[in-house]
Picture 1: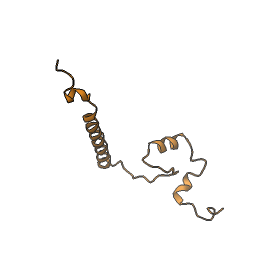
Picture 2: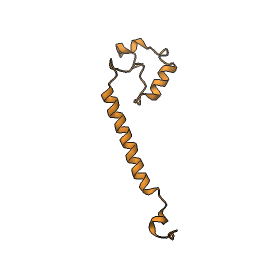
Picture 3: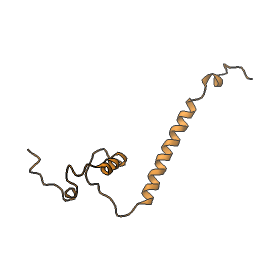
Picture 4: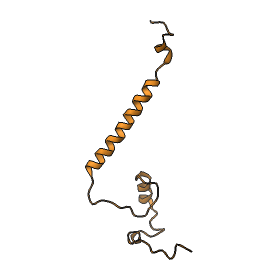
Amino acid sequence: MYLENIPMPEQYASAPYPENINLSNLLYFWWAPTLIYQPVYPRTETFRWAFFLKRSGEALGIIFALWFIIAQYATYPPAHAGILPDP
């Protein structure tokens, strides 16, 4: 085949196929922010709190913005249009 002549990267040697398919790799693939499965992902040595807080803030900001936009149009329209009599 044409891929047999391409050398395998050294980082993939630690997780050859099919030994790299197990439950922990599957769970990591489901929760990792990636679209392509790789047997080994590049990682940093420490947990980057600033990056985590920045991305969490962005996610919360998007959720709030969506809620704010949807809440404007999710009310009962006749009550605002004056169609219903005041109680």
